[in-house]
Image (cartoon, rainbow, N blue to C red; front, side, top):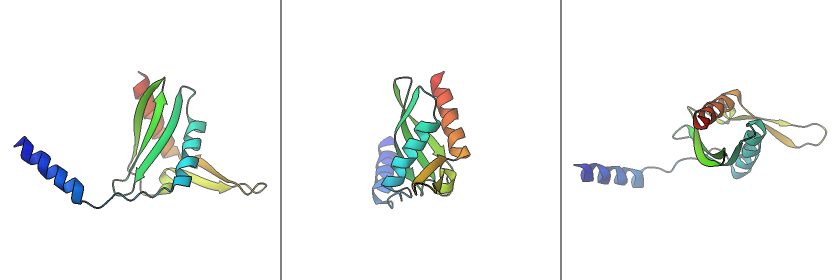
Length: 114
């Protein structure tokens, strides 16, 4: 029975449509910088992978010298992750982590720090 369930699961994964990453590589890089700017000193984000189909993002980070991963779930679009503003003087885009994403990551880091 277990073999049947694993086989069925494998087939469904192989033939399902690919996850649609709605965050571009450039946005990922800027988002990682925004996460690191808003994170506590002992936390450092390394990467982020988002899937619109699954409505979540996985953030890879180091928390107190340990490798960890935190999920930001129930995402409708990029506004649930960040806001982007353009500085008038430099014309450079500045990413700011949304309150929802910040709270999700803070909760996860607090749980990992226990």
